[in-house]
Length: 379
Image (cartoon, rainbow, N blue to C red; front, top):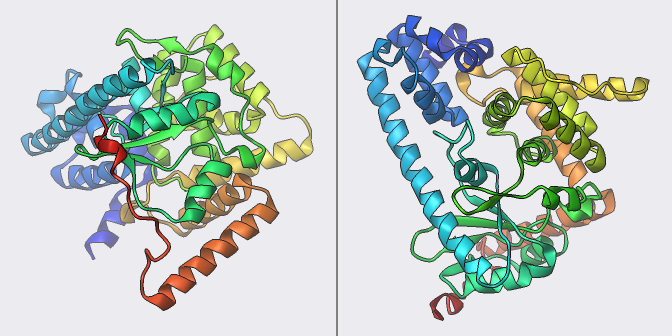
């Protein structure tokens, strides 16, 4: 009964309004705040909005119970922010000593570059980009310095190394931090991996002494990550990231560079979908590329409609049949983009067979290799 009541009292439009005009939230009742806080937590935007309100003139007008909740979220986010900063420094020094230039991506990059969305930005892992020809050196260096791979099957290891744009995740032995080491921004086997020369060309050394992509490349990478993945569980949070980057770097050279990267990477449609939604949801006035030809216009209209619903946070107060169907369509589209059809069928067949065989054995980890922690203790 409670969830049904919540669903009748809260809408996606209200969430958008909370992000677009947070100072207006002072008019909410405690019961309205309760629903909003649950939705923000699901969307991983709780700490982000807390920092925005804390830095505004309306912080003292928010109910004390809500301020206490926001304060806890800010403390947690700041602790993680500090951890990412510390981990980033150690990783940077390790790899630079081997002649490798590590470039931080996504959430870690926002924190290192102190972008507008950095405060309150939660990260489930640290994403790092290195050039493919130094990937083996980078992995070996990390493995020799308290990082290790968890147990996975031979097939999954092969999948990462032959098909994907990253190696299997690395975990820190004592701190438990997760590191995704990339050599591209999307799976090379897909045929849609962007040419990296332009992305590497604009790499920026931040004041903190670590490298990130330039703002326009950050923006495009966030779009690639959002629009080509099969999961959009935190898709609305990614849209807020893009909103913040667009507002912070909103000038003609920035948009010219974004357009250049989109055209060279063949992601013009994905860029247009995102900018259309940013303009619609957050009253933006960002330059939108116009599709050429009827088929392109139809595709753009179709994708914009799908993502309009798929990016709604998956919380009971916002649930609808439309959003569920849209997320399923994104799931299918994401997998169809990841690899050619024949490779996709082979991949799913192998995964299905291995899963079925291990189910018969009664051991889900029967094919996994044992974890080798030996290298982690060499230092």
